Length: 214
Image 1: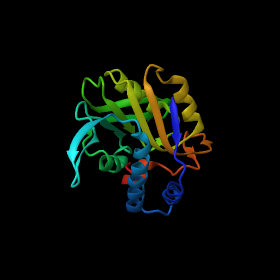
Image 2: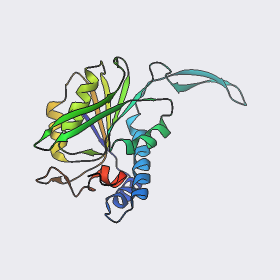
Image 3: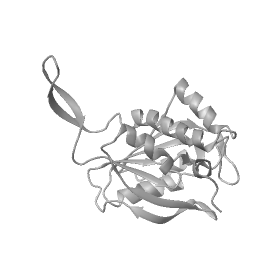
Image 4: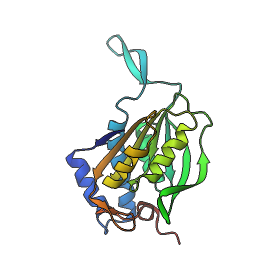
């Protein structure tokens, strides 16, 4: 597993406003989108490209474009991952989008319940980008990555806003080593509390993006 933690004043500034409990949902959503755009720059550093002959106003040249086939696929983990989708598709407008619904089993925090799936049956050769704001226990990330791997994915990059050390450790110890797996985060926080929430964290990302659903 390769971990990349962004280190930039713009990220620090936006993340501080994001964490503030007084930040309204509209601002929260915009900040998530902006942070994901900054993360995408790092997450796509090794994305597949191909030569593209063009003519500038001055002369012919050979540039680079993202490969047309197979296209990369972005997979938000519902529901909070949807809040990151706009920022990523701005940076990768030609990517396909799949959806994966998973929720934590509250009695067993590292176990997940899959309740929705809208993905191609075959992901062989595809570069996959999982997006989910929180890497807390790590259970969701491992389960989602293995879900993609069962469909042939071998190149998976996860983008999360914040992570807990316990979650990173769990992923390192449980991810299938045959997968080329990378994680990009804006920050690694202090710890998980007794309810498996990240400290200092930013609260429930889904609720702050979309409101509380009883």
